[in-house]
Amino acid sequence: MEGSAIAEARSMAGGQDFPVPLLSARGVTLQYRTPQHIVTATWRVDFDVLPSDRFVLLGPSGCGKSSILKSVGGFLPPVEGTLTINGRPITRPGPDRMMVFQEFEQLLPWRTVLGNVLFPMRATGRFRGRAAIERARDILDRVGLGKFTDVYPHMLSGGMKMRVAIARAMAMEPDILLMDEPFAALDALTRRKMQEELLALWDQLHFTMLFVTHSIEEAILVGSRILVLSPHPGRVRAELNADAFHHGNIDQAAFGQLSKRIHRLLFEDAEVAR
Image (tube, rainbow, N blue to C red; front, side, top):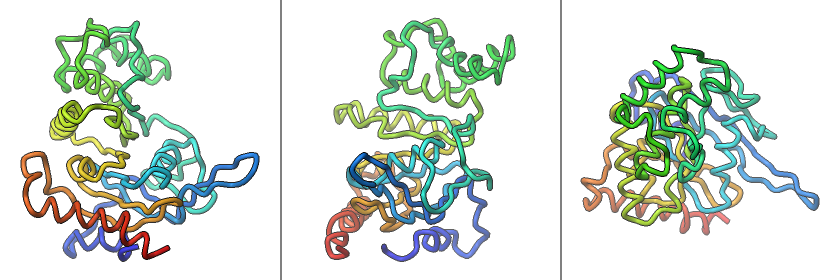
């Protein structure tokens, strides 16, 4: 690992008081049991996610990125270490952590935009009656879909579907959104548009996001901070600041330098460490 990820993150604060983490992982080891053997997905992973972070988990297939997301979601308990949110141990799923799935297939095709946003609010009983409808309409206005409440998902563009999915999650007042390679199956042009849509929405709402990808470029563009994980089992290689980068400066030398550094951490340095 390239130094301590937590120490590097704190050094970015320039000696100032470091913000209190929203989500913390300390020494998290995750495993799956099969009939034949035990598979270790991650090994003693540490990181902190701060409020309004766009925190990216980056690494090759099999490094445990999605496993970490499942564990944060409360579906896969660590065999070693701790995961906490707002200082409380994560022991089960909860409305403080909402998942946005790949390609937004979680939208119900038989429900309107408004109906999709209302569904989890009413199903959990957290919001009821007129209060639920008013809250749903308010969040749809905030994501620019106030005029599309009666439209069905098949009538929406990809970017609009993403906004509905995020609005549905945000209506539950979560502390963090969990996004597992939401753009992985898209072509390059559509993927870029969706990244831009996501960042525009973040500029407006400043939600906290834990985002999984195996794309170096996407990690730099989407993330404010990037946790680089080694090949299987996932160990922390480094934590890097990417807040200065966006689609408008992708051709600058600094972008290329960071991309090369991450590539070295993922592949060249990992080979030496074996």
